[in-house]
Image 1 (cartoon, rainbow, N blue to C red):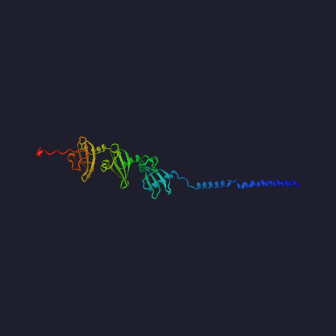
Image 2: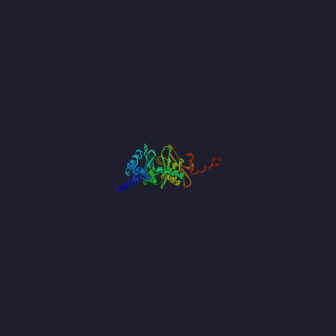
Image 3: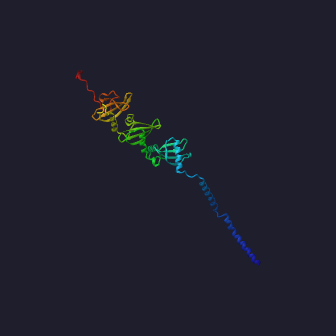
Length: 310
């Protein structure tokens, strides 16, 4: 009996010795267990942070926020589409918006908001790339409604009162008084320079631009000649088939044009502010008017007869 009890005790002791390490292993885990537990804690914390992060704004919320910024920036834009492009280091938001009328904008939610016209952004990018094709022009408008810049430029010409059929318009840049300058070309006549300043448009005929040492890429010499010929209709200068013309200048009496005629002669005509011819001077006798004709060579005066008689 004693032998059996001793054997049982020995077996129990052996079992206890064998189980203890296993129990200890279960409690401590393998050597890499602490890392697994720590990683799980980090993953759990990250998940909790994600759960606490605000949901991304909806398209409706983005458009409402963009409209608020467009209004604060005095753009006059009724936003029809908006994109949230991101957030700056200064924690301002950047939007692109399309408008119900006119070009869209890039708007940064500064105080006050800063709005950049999509047409002018495209012009700046083209100018920069013309100087350096590898240059980065920065963000550009990509909403489909904002990419047809020629459409908006043609609308500008209509707003400026250009009555011709406008076929080409480009941005020229900024004038000394802060206005934005454009050139408009016409498929059926001479074009114009346009200026937008403080929401007011003015236009200058290309024939005047040339007289002031500017250039018009979309207007030909023949188109300027046709313009002056139209002024001559029904006047004493109507017989001049104008092949070339220039604006000479103006004074209190009116504006003066020189016209070269197909017949080889030429005239200087004085027009009033409504472009109605008031007086016509043949080039042959107009040497004292604005320095005389430049497009037509006036015939030399006949020499006086010998003895003062014919």
